[in-house]
Image (cartoon, rainbow, N blue to C red; front, side, top):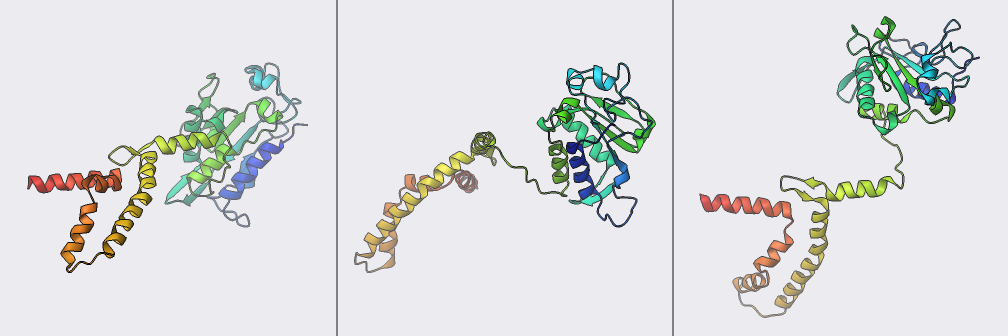
Length: 277
C-alpha cells in the first residue's frame, strides 16, 4: 500500500506545529491536520500522492524525470497544504503568501528547493498556477484554489532526505521560528569573506578595514599614556603648559591614524562645511 514517508511526515509535523496555533480548538484561520495530506485517498490513482502500487501507465510522476523513475517506491512524494492565516512579525501570512514565497524560492533555484518538482497553487484565490521545474505544465484544477500542492522528486524521498529546510526558512522569515539551522564547516569561509569584504556605510569602508583600524588603537592609546606619564613627572606651573605638552605629542598624522574611516569622513565633511561658511 502507498505509504507516507518519514521525511514528509516530519515536514507535515513542522507545519502543523507552527501554523496550528491552538491544536485543541478548531479555528478557521488555523492549519488543521486534515488540511495537510501526503497519501491520496483509496480511489486516487496516478501522480505524486501515489506510490508504486497506484501509479498508472505513463504516469507523469514517474516517466518525465529519471529522478522519479529511479526513485519509485511505495512512498508517496507529495504534500498538500490547506488554508491558514496567522499574524506574526507585524504582518498577516496566509496560504497565498506562503505559496508565492515558496514559488519565488524555487524560481531562484535556492539550494533547499532543488528536490521540489512542482508547486500547484493560487496566488489570489481566483486563478490556479503551477511552477514546474521541468517546465511541462503551467496550471492545475480548481481544487488548488484552497490548497497548495508540493511534489518532490521521488529519489529524494527514497533517500530519506530532509525536506524541512525551505519551510523552516519560511517560518523563520515570518517570525514563527528561530533560524537555528546549523552552519557547516564549508559555510564559515564564505561568511567570513562576505562580512570582511562587504562595504558598509556611505564611505564604502569594509568591515576588515575597520577592524584593521581598531587593531592600531591599543598601541596609539598606550603611546599617549606614556606621553602623559612623562608630562606628569615634569613641573608645570600652569595648565596651558600641560595642554601644550600633550598637544605637542599629538601630531595630525597620529590623530588621523586614530580616527576610524567612517568618523574621519564625518570630520572632513564638517570641516569643509565650516570653511565654506
